[in-house]
Length: 79
Image 1 (cartoon, rainbow, N blue to C red):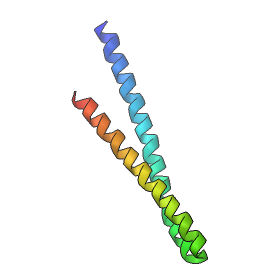
Image 2 (image 1 turned 180 degrees about the vertical axis):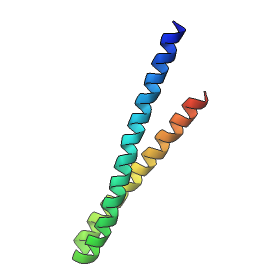
Image 3 (image 1 turned 90 degrees about the vertical axis):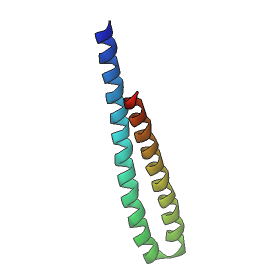
Image 4 (image 1 turned 60 degrees about the horizontal axis):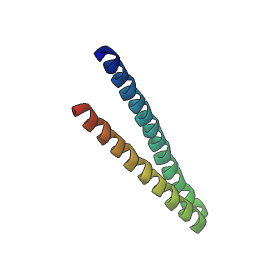
């Protein structure tokens, strides 16, 4: 029974790390998108700046989520 519990815990941790990896990929992509949006904003003006700001906010939110998930996993692994 203890072996099954240990296996279940490993599967659960693996699932969490897969989710964290997906969030990291989203964070990386939104960071690149935000950078590209800044270049486009410089090229097309005010409308581009508004879009760049929205993409930057999305990038910040996804980065914050990534950090929070990482902290939760670190805390979970310590217990």
